[in-house]
Image 1 (cartoon, rainbow, N blue to C red):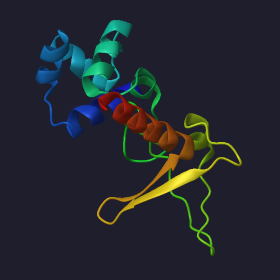
Image 2: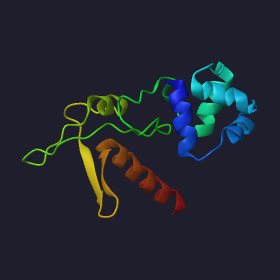
Image 3: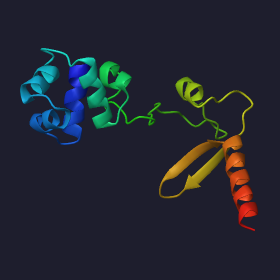
Amino acid sequence: MISMNLKKLRKKYKYTQEEIADKIGVSRQAVAKWESGESLPDINNCLALAEFYGVSLDDLVNYSNDKDKIGPQPKGKHVFGIVKVGERGQIVIPKKAREIFNIFPGDSLLVLGDESQGLALMKQEKLMHFIEAIYNAEECTE
């Protein structure tokens, strides 16, 4: 898996093997061997590669192309899949998304929309904390 991920990330960002080698301080041959699966990078090189590409170490090493054709995502960014909208506009938020963002039955979510960007969901409590911070900042300036 790591060999495919390294190759996919390098091509995605349009780097040569030599450029990657220079960035992390190894030979071009080492990068070629990692991408072909002939050898594996050590943990320090894995960490350097994950940081360089801005992906988690887990995704760099374990991401499987079987899930989708997108490749490892940047840290903190997720693709959870496709959901269908029911007859009354309801959607089911994928389990992994609910786990990562601590969404539980009964939580209130704010639906935000931008006609050019699309829809976004935000937990109501996050919005309330943001409003409270603005209110407190205004008190400090008076």
